[in-house]
Image (cartoon, rainbow, N blue to C red; front, side):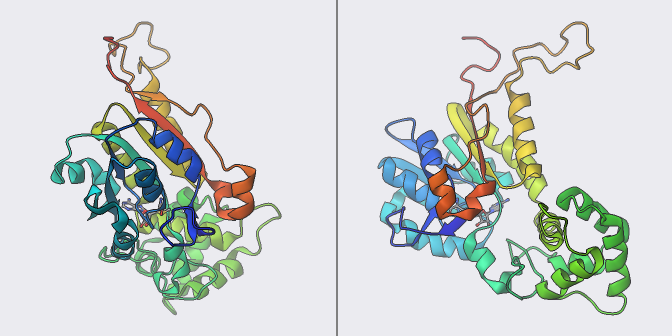
Length: 328
Ligand SMILES: C[S@@+](CC[C@H](N)C(=O)[O-])C[C@H]1O[C@@H](n2cnc3c(N)ncnc32)[C@H](O)[C@@H]1O
């Protein structure tokens, strides 16, 4: 996540990326030439810091959003031909890397979610504060906007989205109300849908996120298949990172963080047999990653004071095991 602030990147933009010190430290552990794949390029804040910290680092920057790529190409111009930017999904990052001529990478970074420019552009439809079309597509070439899903999906599917992606408590009620309302008037703006959620579900209990926030989160995850992307992106990252290389992931809500934690935990296990299995039948020595952050890294007080969005950020980092199979 990216937020306005002071010019930490030295590129003249007044912003800094979340957990920038920690990410830079974890991903500049190796001196000399390194290849970084930034699967969520955004404004290029993290990439910029790493390219500056390591003058022989090369970057393959990936984003689904054409606007982000165009803007960030200018931001990263200082690094010249050390930088290559590609439009695509990070679930395909190993394929995109090979197409760019990289058979492996030293590091992969995924900083999940959307960037400040995306949130702050009312026309993208991500914001609860700014009225705009109910769109929410990171990649504007994909067919299904948020309004299209709301206006077309069957009630059960909508319910599943509100329940699983937003953890909305009265998801059944909301899905039923959406289907009833759209027979009279279709959903088309963010303000309309936010007001509708408030009307149907009422105000959230103290200490809980406002209901429209959860409903927006649910729709955004569905529109962009964010959890599917993450599942496939983690596998793709593990495939392309070289032994001894690193994978860093920043997540912003519990659904994502749980997926990253479980992926890392499983990748660290030598034996993946069911617990009740009396003897090991999987062959053991299966571990592919060593987790470097036993607990997720969170923002330090000075960063929290400067950037409230960093409050939800969790960074997990793992290193690919040099000899999977234990053959040291
Ligand atoms: C939180 S921002 C990244 C900010 C970035 N680390 C920086 O320092 O500027 C996330 C970016 O990743 C992109 N993104 C999210 N999911 C993606 C996916 N599955 N494939 C490619 N890009 C994705 C979004 O379009 C957005 O620009």
